Amino acid sequence: MDTWPLIESFFRGKSIAEQEIKSFNQFVDEKLPQIVNENQVIVPKIEEVRVEIDNIQVLKPRIVEADGSPRTDFWPMEARIRNMTYAGPIYLDMKLFRRDIEQDVKTTYVGDLPIMLKSKKCWLYGKSEEELVEMGEDPADFGGYFIINGSEKALMTQEVLCSDRVMVSEKNAAGDIVVEVISTSGAFKGRVRITRKANGMLYVNFPSSPKKLKLFVLMKALGMDTLEEIRSAFTYSEAEVENDVLLNWENTEIMSEKEALDKIGRSVAPGQVIDYRLRRAQEVIDGFLLPHIGQSKADRLAKAFYLGMMATKAIETAYALREEDDKDHYANKRLELSGKLMEHLFRYAFKYFIKDLKFQIDRTVTRRRKLNISTIVRPDAITERIRFAMATGNWIGRATGVSKFMDRVNYLSPLTDIRKVKSPLNKNRELYEARDVHGTHWGRFCPIETPDGPQCGLVKNLALLSRVTTEYPEEVVEKLLKEKGVRLE
Image (tube, rainbow, N blue to C red; front, top):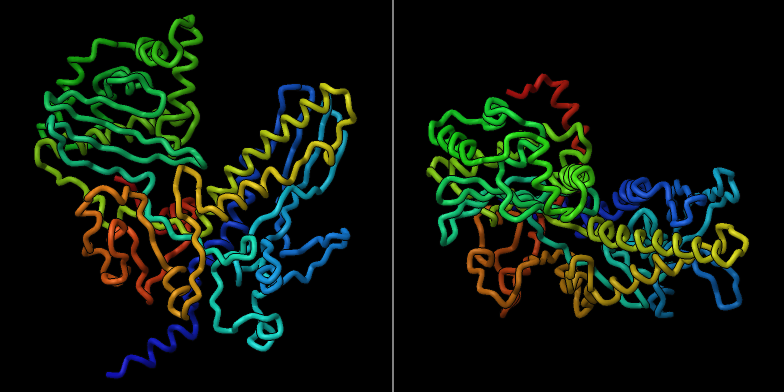
């Protein structure tokens, strides 16, 4: 059977860079408003002043000439020829209050966002082949990249471990079993780790937690006072798990919730009075322990049950009732496309913008100058940080080489650049298993296209027929499952 007509029809309807463009569109349409909603009210040190922000808009690329005249017909080819950045202006609705009285209301320009070619915000979007030729573009060009200072830059897809998924690690030299989860909420990622020692004791570690904190102490701090309550958090039917639960209960000296919170408080707020220690301990538990479940007092019981599930997996692995998880299995991986990478970068730049806004308000009030939105907003705060990261490839979280020059030697060079996938693992270490072709790569990655040398196996290429889906809200899926009658047992 001749399969070429089928493959040709697939590429007639699909673009090579389709997933990158979809990801960027999702970032602009959904993620930008989310980031603004996270920071809707800005309160500087001078508490009588506050700024409320809302309704972020990104317009199509435009240019302001040297004589100050604005132009909206700023096309990609002009950006290439004139060594300029193909970026669209960002506007925010801002309200300035002083002593709860509205002082100023304005839709103001706050910076520029580089626009991906062929995305919804690009002038090339939806154009016919004839129109593209008139604009100086190649009709066969698939887009999916940016133009920064006249250079074509592609963002390299990053391969990361899946967030909010419990992973059981293999035994280390001391015979410990480690179960961990990367809990994510917005920009915050907190690694929560439960360790089962060779003697059967369970310890927990999370951001800002005391060292060698016993799991049952934390569960008591979360509101589980009795043995029966703690046993209900462990989902099991094996006697070995029951044995470990009783062992840990007998070796936990702290008996009340207040004592457990004080134990954590002594570590996070040493030398403070007990009321402050208890409050700080509660803040740490709510804010840094499993933030993907929630960050309020009402979520503490759910966190205790989640920790019980993690501990059950650790105990079952120790008694060979469960196998360790394979970190190289692609069900345990996620790919961060251009939209997700831009989300990380914009969130960082926007936080700096807010910090700068607070500083400008404080300085203006201290110097007794007139306070209005035009004088406190500095658009370079966002623009410079985004442009620097995209020009150098140095990203958030110490990642390097995220953006790279598009190679235009032949038609295949940009095709491979746009579909490269990079692992964050250290290229100078051996990591034999991470470099191997895994069974789950079948149909997803090319087993041959990888560089020689230190990067071998760590930089991969998506197979030509593979597609990466974009993020989807969990609430919609949960609602659909409940409507279909799915029940939790």
